[in-house]
Amino acid sequence: MTALGFLYPGHSAEDDYPRIEQLLGSDIRLDLIHTDIGEDAHRVDALREMGSAERLAAGVEGLRLTGADTVVWACTSGGFVHGWEGAQEQVRTLARLAGMPASSTSFAFVHAARELGVRRVAVGATYPEDVAALFADFLRAGGLEVAGTRSSGIVTAAEVGTWGEEEVLALARAADASDAQAVLLPDTALHTAAHLGLLEKALSKPVLTANQVTVWEGLRLADRRVNATTLGSLFTREPLVQA
Image (tube, rainbow, N blue to C red; front, side, top):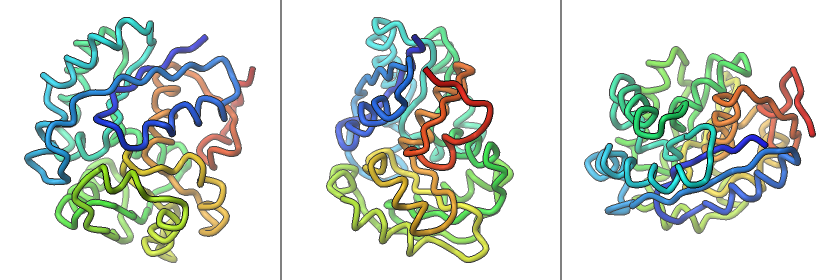
């Protein structure tokens, strides 16, 4: 059994994780610990506080009891708002606190794009424009090219969590660019696990979503690869590891 730990702020789309666990269909356990979201606002100061060492440390205490092998900070905006260097320090602090390999959703997007051999991406963000722009800057710092960024201007994770298939598909289509090799939807408050097949079929290219890449990153840290076609192109890479 491989146990993957995730620190997830608040309550919005956490039900993506048991869904993904079921779709993996292997000896993988996903352990989710909720951290204090603080002020629910896609605003830089609030997002920085959400991902502070103090809030992460409080979550780690609960995570240790699960027996997790790795930990991922499952909040994209709570990572990239610190910039590339700041996000690296955040992950180093998390690894030290947890005593296990650690990463974050922000880095998961960069690593997943590299895994797929993707260099040029389009971004469909639920965030306000200034926050979406910081994510694009983070991707560029990770060596990716950004073909375009689409902002939905939503302020709270709670509102993002109410979106269904229709809204998610509309965002992905609006964000897509003809020269983009993949479309990225960077918000762990957005339900996407049930829509990955539809998204990739509609856009005819890989679609990377926050909760999807977060779980993949946990597997990467644990040196596991699982083939699960319903979870998109990212989960169809060789070599395959199946139950």
